[in-house]
Length: 365
Image (cartoon, rainbow, N blue to C red; front, side, top):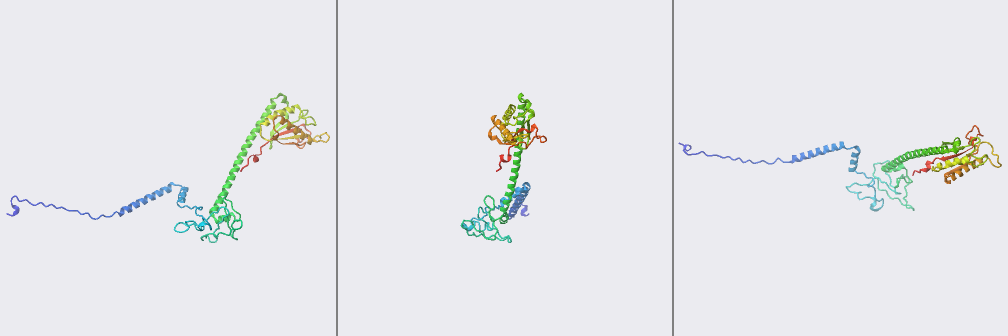
């Protein structure tokens, strides 16, 4: 019997251990590339969203912010003065300001490049010799323009030359002219509205004064018969109040400037109403065509004396002397009844409350 068959003999147990050895890593470069791709896509979609969410003016403002083009900051600093007329950024890798346009205040001028070679670089301008008054002499045959600080152009150059020399200056002048035209139009509209409102208020005040005079005359029994001899109307000059003669009911004694009691009482009612108005007053006297019989006197003197007598009565009852602009006599040259030169109605006194001269009342600066 073999050894395996021996009693009590056990078979061996074999334990197999396998050691797993991991291989080398595959690398992480793809992760970086993927992250860059995702970031780029996010930035792309963010850019598309911004383009869709902003207006044209906002996009233009953003573009101007990241690409500044300040004409004033790129100007020269000297023209023969310290630093040789150049800024610290004139040379090197940074932006150079050679050939930039400039706006010169006062009397200092800057020359434009030749028109026939717009791509050529502008060389630094040589300072011309100064004259005895301290102003720079201009080379003959070369067009130049100087802009003052107030926007006006100096002698020796026109607006076209300024635009050729400096497009920004030309645009500034054009904008200034357009703005001035707009301001002038706005002032005209404003003045027209002012005049219309003042005329409306003055017309209302005149109508109220006319109603007050009529009411004062009608409410007085002593003047009830004079209502036909009082005429109130509006003319181009203003509010006209006429006291008219009737047959056998004159306001003045025949051939005289003496006011009778009825006319005096009527003027006493008119004066307080006129005193409440601020406008100037004109008085004119009128006669009929009958020749004046007094020696050495005519209807001219008579009409002027009656107008002046009316002025004195109005002053006695409250009006100031400064209110009267003119007191005139017209004789029979302006009849109320032209068909009948001898009519009693032609003998009258006209009191006119003059409209305000709005052109003088408001001066536009």
